[in-house]
Image 1: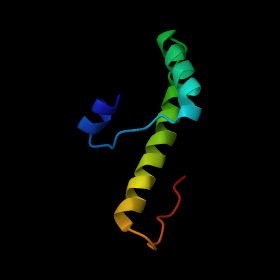
Image 2: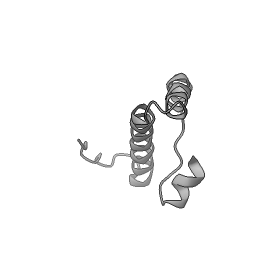
Image 3: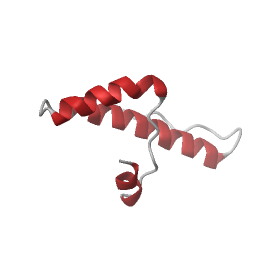
Image 4: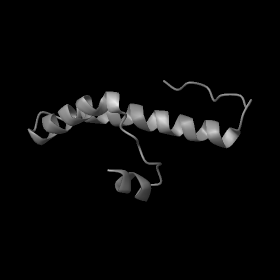
Length: 70
C-alpha cells in the first residue's frame, strides 16, 4: 500500500495499533466484494493525519497551523 502511495507522490500512511482491527475488517469487506467505502475512509483519515504531521514538521515550532479542510 505504501509503495503505491509513494509512487503516486504521497507520503506513507501509518496504521496505528488502535486502527489495526478497523483496517483488517475493511480489507476483509473489500475482498468479500462488500465495497471499499470503509477502507477508503480509513485511508483518507490516516493520509490526512500523515500530511498534517509532515506539514507541522516542515513548518517548525511555533508556526501557524494550516486551516482545517472539509
